[in-house]
Image (cartoon, rainbow over the protein chains, first blue to last red):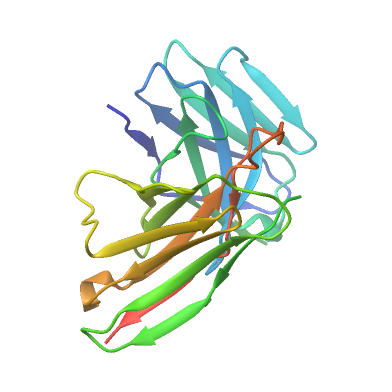
Length: 112
Length: 118
């Protein structure tokens, strides 16, 4: 099956690091993505990782993938108030042309 | 990056009427587009895959006669909610892979259409 789960809510102080976790069940996933959704808006791709990688860093974002445990995480360094949003992980089998299965979403709240 | 637009951005309609939502790829061609539905505080659920020049593929549990999809050109897919009822009220989002020669592992999402059925 294709179930992707995330914790519902995370609150961090501005300047701290945020870690958002995701677990998935489909071992055939090829690409794993992190999307950001601000209120009433569409989705913005933050980063993605191939299943044969275990880490990817892009400026303030670090993605860790534990394929054995089917666990994906997104670390945001120096979290800012503008990072407050809902974050979705998603998986696909073949990449761009295949459908995405989204996680349940994590609402990140950044406090001063 | 590539841009996907949706129209309208929000719509309010009476129960029993039909509503058409457009999804356009503005600067690239999309042979495939995806339609998602998102209920408040929930995740996106794929409804159907829209294929240019052929019939759409619907996910299990999605009524194809209620949610009509037409992908008549390489830049436009439409979703028509027929005989809408209050339970159809939701946020509808489309996405499109970059298509031929895209070379990017990304789908581009539209800004979404909020449908409220009274």
